[in-house]
Length: 80
Image (cartoon, rainbow, N blue to C red; front, side, top):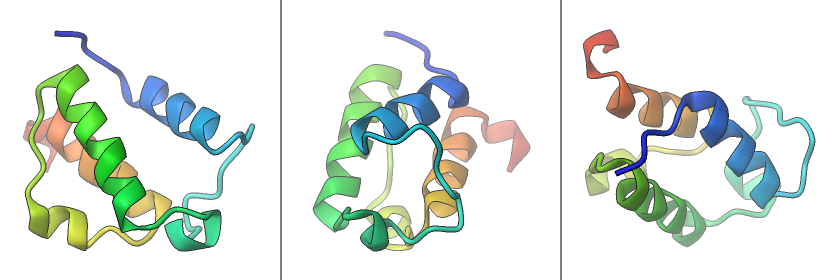
């Protein structure tokens, strides 16, 4: 199982959106992502990192910051 860093995850996210930078306060829907896109990205992360997301966590993700914060908590549970 591969271990991704938050930097690598951010880079993958920006690549997926075809952007060089991203405003973490931006709402995902304003970036053209719907809830299915978020679920697909998180499923991909589950496969590549072994972390698991709860449906309730995914439902609360509205901004880029929310997404990255949720992922970071999963990757580094001791920093909750």
